[in-house]
Length: 416
Figure 1 (spheres, one colour):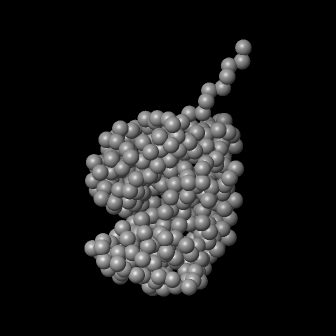
Figure 2 (cartoon, helix red, strand yellow; figure 1 turned 120 degrees about the vertical axis):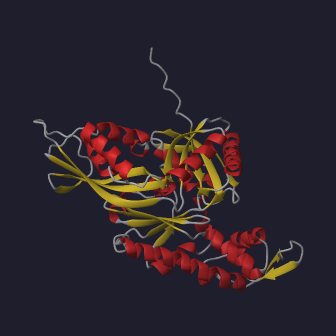
Figure 3 (cartoon, one colour; figure 1 turned 90 degrees about the horizontal axis):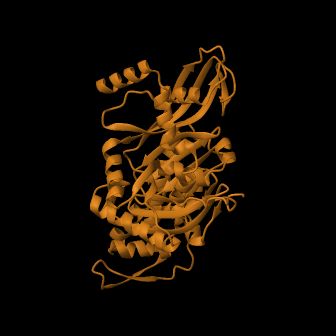
């Protein structure tokens, strides 16, 4: 008698952002994400630029977001895939090599794990650890451009990797926060890479593009070319800076400034209409205040220009400014929702820019969960299906190291 197929496993992605926690719960069916429910909770007092500054408050926000998602999805979860961000994350590229001395020179998965382990074997400060080692491409006997070497033959296997390191203390704090909320972390993932899995197509990765994730207090920039991520950086400015400018310039509260930004703000002068005034309150919460869109524009535009100028400068410093021209800039994150952000990005960066949306053939979700605010959480659901983002890859790489390499690595870590 034929056994019925097991139902898809329920998985959860939790994005700990600059000042907000988002959660999506879903299932993967035939490579397609089906979102069952979602939730979000503000946490400006517990998070600062993606870094936990108050564990109890952030844990409470995680609990609220997950419980809201559970209620919407009519299910319960005990473990989550965790998206992290913040200025403590640093990245750079490295290269590893591995000699295949066997008579049979056919490359095995163990050989691939060993060469990636070699690329990971770098001296790090005692307060830092490697979060990801993302292969960019392999070389066989000096011949570059091999994406999948397993099964091929060579005497020398080399790999280029994109290494992302994190502060051990900050990473430990966010893991403790989720544990205090009552959930187990399956794997921490850099949120930018999770969003990239969802929003950047294989063709765009090959042609070259920039992914710009605009958070509340930071912008995550990722550069893709030749099929892989080549550069990533956290930039310490975000959409909350616009809110703060409005609150200061208009003499109103942060809550009123945020409402004005969302309901009446725009990031490009071409969107200025009839300049009809909007009503709000002064900083005391009672005094009536009238604000015209032109007044908002005078405050918002300089900050938006500064944000994208910093992105442009980082692209130039990375050496990949020309490489991203074919695919342009893909915007995501809550800060990308302001009207005119794509036009502003295009003008300042000198690139075609668009709002990143998941491909309809890869996602089944209500309209609410397709917002850029949930891109990282949805990307985490996809990451759960890929060995590239699981700790299994790192553990396999570590076990593939020869004993002398493991001893040398331990000795170097002790020195540095």
